Image 1 (cartoon, protein in one colour):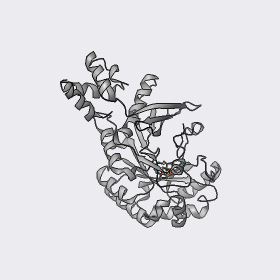
Image 2 (cartoon, helix red, strand yellow):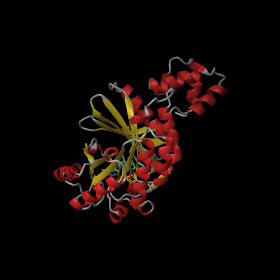
Image 3 (cartoon, helix red, strand yellow):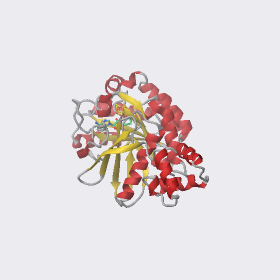
Image 4 (cartoon, protein in one colour):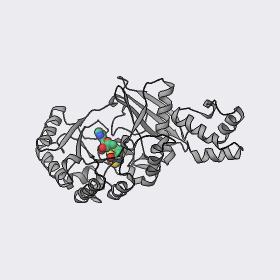
Length: 342
Ligand code: SAH
Ligand code: SF4
């Protein structure tokens, strides 16, 4: 929903300004799905708004629910016909989280990621980004799912710092008390390591969580896996992290997808320990080990047992580390599996 377009349509229809507040409340807090849904509006205004302005920037093309019911993935069609995927997760009984996309595709080209394989088509607009959250709130209301959706992670398709301005505007709107009202600490943005973005983010959104997709603490290997490492190698990343935690005093999550025989042996763990220790106080750097979700690439997952061993190596060196639970694999809705093919 684009509120300035709605405001212009209201002005055009000669409606009083409090109508905008009514629409805002109905859309964001009560999860109305259309202007027709907003009973407090007079019928003729509902009709003229429906004819003149789109309530949502995309339409649902396909929805899948995982067997355990804890993950749902929606394929949304944008107004130019392009499609993006967004995921609704239920990590625990009372918690709902959405994983949203910031671009159609991605230009970074990480070798293990399904989105990376498709290349970049375009950035999403701020409205297209936040409408994914609105979509899930509407869905939860329609399906009478209990609880509230107020955790958002920018870990869907795309590199958020490659479209910094659009992402920044979407964050402001998610945090706006008059619209989504989601707390900064309930939002996480994940980057493959675009240093200028990390620097701006520290100044603009010190309360929002930052995740860095590291995947290797060896420059040659990281450049292979995450090609943007060539432009922003580990020494620059490490400095950016030090500056970030010094400025914000916030914990940063380091994402590390374990790839069998590539980045999961004892020496990889040692390099990771050194990198973490050089990048800030260890209590502010948390390593999230991710079990690789199979994509159409030659990579293979590290078996769970070896992942636990890798984790123990980090823990015994005093590094905080967890192994991330994977939801939504059966619907290709887990990390790195989003490719917009339904
Ligand atoms: N572009 C951003 C955010 C989207 S990717 C980034 O790279 O950080 C979200 C997370 O999923 C990243 O940590 C990414 O490295 C990880 N990921 C990508 N492909 C994966 C796969 N096949 N299995 C598990 N995690 C994957
Ligand atoms: Fe892009 Fe992130 Fe996938 Fe890398 S992991 S290709 S940065 S979406």
